[in-house]
Length: 459
View 1 (spheres, rainbow, N blue to C red):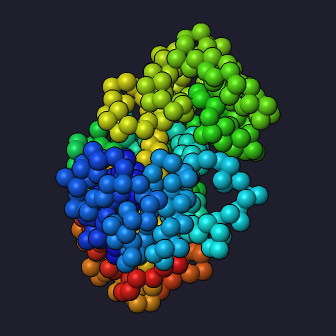
View 2: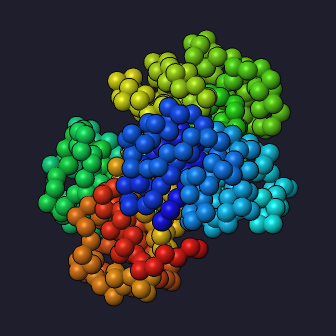
View 3: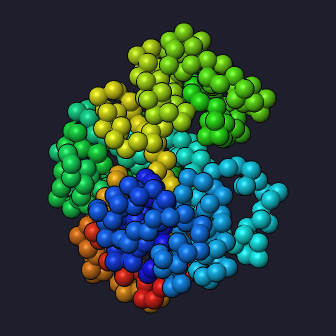
């Protein structure tokens, strides 16, 4: 497949890295020569220097025979015009745009993106994606990563194992026997720098980070098995009243189980707008890194502090101070991936990566076959894929044991055509219409796509 990626920043580079490694023909466009040079030096991609919205630049990038264009520059208007040019001049079939400005996403103006107006097939809004990720984190605070699949009926949970984990040194096949009714499966293990798909004989050790796919109703029990009992979150402090913070606060106010939320915002005008927009959230004007302001927000009594400003250092330091004052759990929004290794030494429990959530959202619309959802693990080292088994797939009619799955691929959950969830076992037969949730190491993703389909199908 021939794909043009406009924007060679963090998101564009990561998407290019993923797609170029899967035998796609990728061109990357950016007006910054240094970013284009970085992409061409490190990836097998064609680089074009210029403004993505200019027809001559898109033509140089190969738009005349491109299958897809992904507009992910920092400017919404450039992304919109790029899609318009790709459609009107080059008749590109699939157009994806990253749009940040909330006004463009107002339902009142949805006609703007009709095919006969501004023909964008898929709109990705990073702030909405980050808000959803933040809410998932709050709902499962003892995990370092969490993602929904199968319309929320199944969840991927990342769990850090500590010395008090009750199932350390137990082979995974024995775990299955000990907890025979538990609808959960360990699909990935990070040990040191290595991420792998475990085998039944593998054991778990303190310091491991495990990825578990569990049915939602069994997630609390699953966490308890791994020594991470769930506790209800009753008090929460939000730092930052931008679009993400405001979206999270509104969602918390709409939940039936009331959460006592306090919000700290440094900018007075933004704080006033948040106070006007929210009903039950207490909004405080001040600096989230200031001890006196954190004390006024009663952070020492908070179950969770969630730092969502647009400054990584502010988020990290706010979390450190909140933890030092007694807050049980601290979650930081972190844009710069080089900051993530500092989290453990700083005592921060979890982070949210806008880049990772945006990349996962875009990749969901790039894959072949009946792919319904994709979530990237770590720095693109693996993916969790939700996809439907087609009648043309080599998986149809075979059991999991005979399906010839690559070593780095595990099926974590199955939903049958009638909606019944099935815990995967070796003798489970896969049929056309089944929806699978699979863990796949990066090197095995192309093989998974081949197993799921015979010909490219857009949906």
